[in-house]
Image (cartoon, rainbow over all chains, first blue to last red; front, side):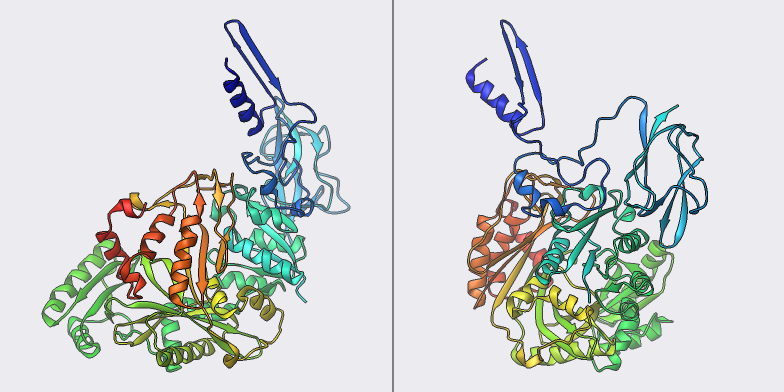
Length: 162
Length: 454
């Protein structure tokens, strides 16, 4: 492998999010890894559980300026573990754990649910919408607080399938 | 006092509204679809809420989710931009009933002007010329011929249930009318299941000239001059300019007054546009009113120096327009080119994809309104307009040369755009002479080899 090719590989790595690259040829082995103080990975906009709000942190400069040449990244989400999924909000509104302040919460950590089990209420425009699990499994984690505003697609519950 | 505005739109107009809000010290909330996470205005807004999946029908057209977002974020007003819900009277009404200020006219004005025949009737009563025609469908061939003769040939026979340029036949005299009338009825019956037709005067090779209106909530209605939008392809505008190279000072005055009368007849508030067709003899006819801010508003902003989006927000805030008709100066000439992600050499097929290198032109008299940047991926779910280039100067000649120069510097690599097409039009003698009518683009494409505009 020539120096020129190695330089090309380094360049490709810089311009992507690859953290590690390895190649083996006859009599030649190359491994390149991004250092901890190497190019920062640009995480744009929201974290995995976006409290709605974005621009405030990046208001100093438009994010694209930092990202020049870096392919756009969708909201940095933690890697999907096997058998784990998320119940996401199908609407914009306010999340409630129970049907009313005096009622018991629909679901807690450890609750087993099936497809039509109610898991929470999302209030949108004064209408209380019961949200169903739409999957079978056990609640692992509740990702939003009671009374928190949520957006479309926001992760509400972490569920272990089955 | 409006302190926070929800921007119910995307792309370049959403960015435009964010900019105006920032200058006014107003907080912004961007609502966006999952396909627009990387959008520039979403990153620049103070807050952002995802309202749905990539399709417009699952996001930007979801009035319920937009209003829900407005409520949980406690906004004072919603700016609808153009397209989407901007001319949806029901949405404006929902805002009104939720006590959120809709930045635009009242819902009843939107409703009135949204119905094309109600609109024509309304402005006709205010003494604004409309395209002469039968008042509704014709009951018989005899009645149709009578109307055709009264209007004067040529006439166009249109299907009542038609649209999109279909179900229309043109007749130039009594003999051809007798034939075309029956053909039109048969075609209408086959295509739309309804053979009813109406008659309108056929205006040959008209110019499309529209007047920008600003009206406050205290009764003041002003016009900010005209825009000539004759360069169109399949009824989609490509280039707009102001002033129109065709209008005389006298005709401009008459049409300006007519535009104001039309807006007053609709009890209009906020920004709007009155569209006219103008024939070769200078006869002008009202065709419709757009009850929203338009794509081509920058043309008027550069000619008059008036910030239309800021004025919209001020008007919505209940403020009075602090200038009069006589204060408005038309000092410059401005030309706008709509840059689309399309391939003009292959019948304008859309060209979504990732922009590799983006370099926008600048310099004296150049304005670029665009939300794209190097590395941005154009989502395939929405329209193909990626930006607007506006060149302006003290004369039309300067504006032409400047816009051409700016187009030559404009680099957008990785996708196909209509930049080369715009350059070819700006270099075309007929356009340079100011002779373009709505028939221009068809003629231009027919006589220009594809390698000159791609």
